[in-house]
Length: 491
Image (tube, rainbow, N blue to C red; front, side, top):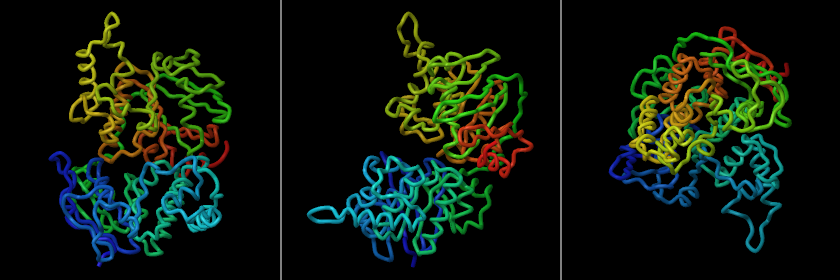
């Protein structure tokens, strides 16, 4: 008998079946990976397992006893805990208050010292030593992730469900997280692990369940899959070239950056990007990569020399940078990229509405035609241009942002974590878009924490460490070892 056994789970919304008779089981001391493209049904599945939503049909048993479907508190009390991709912490409350939120100790007054000490013991078990009276806002992302896990484990969890837990972590932090999960497995927990990062799946999971279009298509020991066969199961087709071949001519420098500095963020950054070239900006989280990009587009003050097409420039605002031919696609598309309740078409056209304006009057017909053409050019899949951007898959949200900035001709496109939270099929589409841009002569600066992506797509790799560029490697000489050496030591 499995620790957790879900049978024939089904769910529909508005007549559309998003989950179709899905079976899933987890043993004690097993890490089961749940994979699939965006829209495959993974989120619906874990919401049913946690009680956030009730299925239309099916049952879930924990240790042989049925769980009360659609009752999250009762399911959590029975031992099923979830750590979601988006943190659910109260940032201004202490670590201890977050860990004990909803199950505080004390009747007439809170036993704060007892709660603090218990929270610190639980975190120490996970290899984290912090003062539990500290506000969560002051913790690193990795430590906030551990607070989420500690809170989940305070309920004596038997099943731990993690949804994209490594999405915002550096490589070192991911390694620490995976070590913690292996320790929890050794203690007998059953773990359901959802991730788009296949390297993590192969390095961590004992078994894999694949969903596609809401249906179960494969389950087996991780060792029975290789990368190609797992991708094929997920997308229903071969993605023979995960990183497509580059066909382009590299031309003159588009942007040249010398000794760029912004106090408190980065101190000495130098690199160039040429026509038709993809330059990967690599480094650990906190190295200053995103801050460098924000300075280039006028969102942060800086000193140093920047030349665009050979001419010195110093943009004071993002608008000035955009008008000069730069584009920046943010790493945080949900909070700083899309306008979630606006339609997909409006999200595409919002930056360049003057294109569709005559005598101060916006032509809705011309705007819609422009959005339609852009959506077609970037193979953006939506039910209509009026579909709210928040309801698009991660890959289609990303394509909408790229389409937004390419409504007008650009010379340099900065892509910050372009495939974060994007499934393997959408990744391949984004890579093809990047290659198409360089074939048209655009320069692309790609910031990525995914080292295989950097090595697979970049013509050159520029590495940063603690606010400084520590080296640049041509494609032929860029290896994981050489990049990580530069990323972890000063020049």
